[in-house]
Length: 221
Image 1 (tube, rainbow, N blue to C red):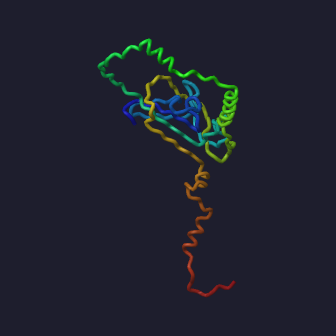
Image 2: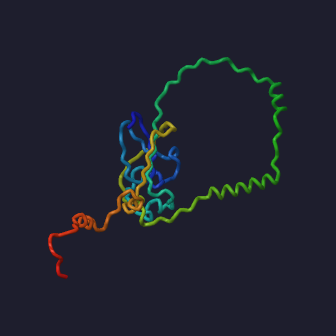
């Protein structure tokens, strides 16, 4: 909590929870938290009066997959920006006036300036080739198709959630950032985060009680 208002950019599966866009945290639309306050965001904001609930589901059924934005599934991110505090501008004693730029100085600078170079046809072709190469490099990478084994967030039933737009003067430096990756239990087991369950835990109990000898003869088969 902070003593000033805070704006938080909240994205789920790489999509802003307010407008479902994928932008930088600074350019994103943000939720406002009152000083020392909290906020609960329970769904995708669909209008100024309604939202649709978050719910955990598979990648294939996720809201991001429905929009064709599957590059950042399984991640919840929140970036916080403080509101700028009012500050006082102190009076400054003006310095000596700058000397006027004389006409002879301007003429001398114009004469000493190098002449502009014209691009040749070869240079133009090279630039065009570089442009094509850079365009290929900027092309979007391919990602595996959404599956039914990994977790993502869907778009659920509609609920009432009134909001209004305001303008804030924010500090450009984030005050804090949180990123959470979420997975189903099976994926957490495969990653080694949760110990693997043994199908027959009673076997270990039996082996703990095992003994090498019993005070009796061998039984008849």
